[in-house]
Structure formats: structure tokens, C-alpha cells
Image (cartoon, rainbow, N blue to C red; front, side):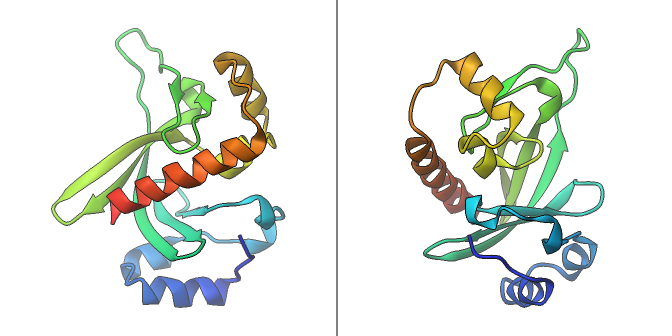
Length: 161
């Protein structure tokens, strides 16, 4: 993914007809992102990380608003571990969330990594990636994981728009 600055983001948000309230609340600091080349998408959230936009710049450009909700403990006070629907990374309960996309009068939701750093997880650039590979005993190559991420991301975006 190529780096984008604040002005480019604002133009893309306006073109995508993202609600002004969401645009106003987004916290985007491009200077904090030093690994643009390793990103297949970027999630830009508000301060509470409860809402944001998913920016996918590939062959086509997609900017999709979403809601992000941390998973709640079950009756025993535990949050179950999950496998992210986007990147297939195993995440401990505290590191998991549910991402929801509004479609007309309904919504579609997926389990996901709470940090939404799926692109870095599949490239083994995070501690969660190493833990996930051990838990899942997955031995496919990084290129295969990146390909899988892109295919799953395309399906998720298609279901979200």
C-alpha cells in the first residue's frame, strides 16, 4: 500500500461519502505508520477505537465505515480465543473484537484482531503472529498467507458494500 497523507485521506473520505461525524472523529497520524509497504489495508479509528474506516488501496479503492466492538467475557469471566476472519491469525480473547459493516438496513459482522494489524500478522511482524503459528501449527509460506489475506479481504469488502 502506498503512503497517504491527511489531505489525501480527507479527499478520499469525501469521495466515498463517509458521514461528516465519522470523518471528524477519525484519528489519523500517518507519521506513526512506518510500514506502509507491508499493509494491504489500514484501519483508521476514532479515539475510542469503536468506529472508523477501512481503507483498501489495491486494484480498486475501497473506503468502508465500520464499528469495532471488543468481545465480552462469557459466564465464567473468560473471553474465548478466536481465529480472525480476515487474516486467520489465532488471537487470545483480550486481543479479539467484532467488526461490523452497515449494509442498507442490515449489518454484517466478522471476528477480527482487535488491533486490525492483520497485514502485519500474516507477514510475521508481530508477537501475535508467532503465537498464532504455534497454536495453529500452520506451515504455509508468508506469500501464501498474504494471498489468503487478500482473497478474504476482498470477500469481506464485497459483503460489506
